[in-house]
Amino acid sequence: MTPRPWLALSALLALCACAGDTSDMPLPPSGVVDAGSDTDAGSDAGSGSDAGSGSDAGMRPVDPFADRVVSTTFGAQAGFGQDRMPGVVLGPPVGAGQFTGSLDVLSLGRGGTLTLEFTDLLVVDGPGVDLLVFENAFQRAGGELFVEPASVSVSDDGATWYDFPCAATDSDGGFPGCAGTHPVHSSPGNGVSPTDPAVAGGDGFDLAAVGLARARFVRLTDTGLTSSGGNSGGFDLDALAVVNGQLPDGGTP
Image (cartoon, rainbow, N blue to C red):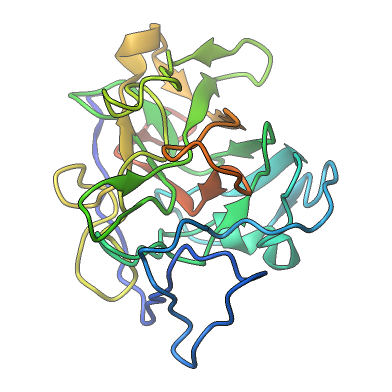
């Protein structure tokens, strides 16, 4: 059956927050810090492994977002968002727009990894982009983007993995093939669809590029690099969204 784009459900609340490092800059009452800062949502909290592993957000209706955290391995300077696991990486993106990075994220730390599973709506190869990955990249006042790229791998069975090529050292080219390179515009309640690659923001991935027809699992691995070459808490995941989806039994929602 031909896959089709999934239309997102609208929620009530939106979070607007910047990707500032809360360890060295206090947040004003609005929860937003200067988008021109060189810091991000990462912190100096300790690293760990398997935090939130195997947990989920309980029973939810079919939606295009990740449903379960399978495993995590945090790298150096991870910590931000761990107290809100697993919900912080499940559900829709909470983007803050072109010039502000959301704090509704989980920082993987340098070299950290996170594996998520779709259980009710799987990613399938359809026309164009099939999967969107949302981080909290933002554009500085000077026009350049602050980016913490991650590589993306996908699997249908959780055993055989397919890696999207990620040019993590090609900052001039915009880190082609990596996640975390574009600001996020979709947020609950702002009317911007999180499953429309033309407006949602984030980074799109086409399963055809790796020769996979369907994906149930997505693994993100921080590259340890940033657009500024500075120290950071690593890739900060906001959400995943299915663009072309199929029910586990092969039907369409």
